Each structure stands twice: as structure tokens, then as C-alpha cells.
Image (cartoon, helix red, strand yellow):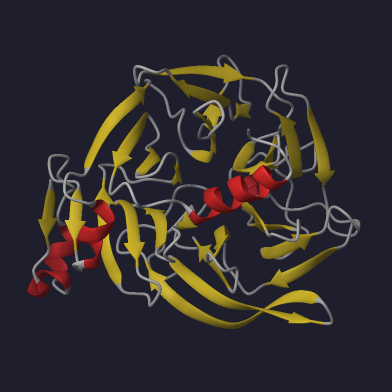
Length: 360
């Protein structure tokens, strides 16, 4: 079911204070959202546990109809140490999801993305092990190897999320949440966004000036990059509502054959909490996991609507056409929307892999 938000409530403070209604999870702010969600949108719980097992790094494998994801920060029993676990959930032909824990060597996992027959994960690192970008095989025992673990001699802070450009370069964010949460040393770098070329080994800063850069994605044509700043949320759990909970847009321009980010501008601000994970559909609409669920904006920055869930959504991914997996900490939800909606990144990955004979 959906609920249309009257114009007068869209700007009223009481509209922001309303609690999410799980019986009416689709909030329509613009009629364009009706085309996105279709005539019979639904959300349903497909996995549930008694701890925060579903937080970040959702990666859909279309070959197995499976989703990989990781937990929130968890305490180890009888210990002061903390950990983050990685899970693989496979959908059966009957629609039932089977979830199990896998144990690749990825220290404090966070963001993830398909990478040919492998998966790239962000490793935030620990007090004794640097973070970076880790490549994991999909095949058991899920062998992992590090692609990059620092910037020209200095360790990253706690690498958070990543995306791959069609040229093969890996772009990623590096906030300081690991230090704030007590499992990383004091930062030696600003909170920045990087581009790493695995072919040449070149690494460089492509954007700075963030409080806590978090999610990032390209527009379908890769002419725009969207980067979220979750500076409103600190690693100790405190909120500072005077700080950004904002999505910034950048133009991707080429100079001397290399891409640069320019023309930084505010694209949107989350209504509640901070915009965490971010992705585009093939029409250029922008989706982000926020404190009240998944918020959706048109390419022009207009808020189109929200898929509201109690507790919000940290991250999500597109799966089959017209489907999304939403990570809601102790629950994983499946949203079914219009069957023409597809994730831009997933479509690009499938096209690229088909050309190389993978994912067949």
C-alpha cells in the first residue's frame, strides 16, 4: 500500500515527526514515484535474527540468486573485542531464503560490489591490521587477497564503501568511524574519497572536504558521481543535527585522459538521519538508505518518495527486475516494485561480464 503526502504536510514539522507505518510503507511525494513502485508494491521480511546481522555491503549474485552482506559491529562473547560477520543468503526456487555465515579474511567488512567472478569488500581494518580493498572469491573457502591497503605509506582510516568505473578503476570512501568505534588507530589522513587503478597501481584523492564520506555511486552514464556525507552520525552513536546528512553531486570530467570530480553541489538532504548506501536505477533516479527507510530522488534532486521501515535502512541492493533487498539490522526485507525498475550498476556489471564470458 502507498500513502500520498499532501503538499501542506511535506513542509510541516509534524510530517517529519510521524512514525513509520509498516502497513503503509510507500510514501508518495511525487507522482513519478507511482511509476517506480508500480500498481502493487510490497515489502516483506525474508530473514530475521535476534542480533544486527544485516547492516552493510549488500552484493547480489544473479548467477546464484544470492545476496552477500555483513553485520553491524558486534561484541564477541566473553571478550572486549568487536567483530563484523559476513553472510550469504541464497533464494530457493520456492522463494525461501537460506542464510549462512561465511568466514573470508576481511577485517571489519563494510561496503561491497561485484567484481567479475569475485566480490570486492571494504576492509575497515583493526588496531593491528590496515584496512583497504579486498578481493574475495565467490567459491568456498572464499579466498581473499588485498588489492590496496594505504595511501602512499599512510594507512587508510576505515574504508567504508566503493564503486567500480567502467575503466576498471575502484573509487572508495574513507571516513574515521573505525577510530571513533575503538577498533582503528587515530587517523593519519583526512576523510576523503579515492580512486585506485588496479592495472597501474595508481592511487589518488578525488574529493575531500567531507565530515564523514560514506556511500557513493555513479549515474547510469557515469557523468555524475554521488557521494553521501554522514557527518550527522558519529561513531559513538551520537547525532549532531547541525552537521551534514547530505548527498553531494559531482561532474566527472576527463583531463589528460584521467577522470576528475568537479562542480561539487548539494543534491539532496535526508529527511531523517543520514543517507548511507546509495545507488541509481537505469533511469537516473537516486536511492539512498536513510534513517526512515529508502529515500528516492529524481535526477533533478526532487524527493519522489520513500520506502519507509521502522529503524530505517543502512544499505540495500537491487536484485531481480523490480526487486530490492533492504538491510534493516535485525531483519532483511524484500521490496517488490515495478518490474521495469533495474539497478544501473547491476545492469552495467551484467553487460560487462557477459562480454567477458562471465556470469553465464
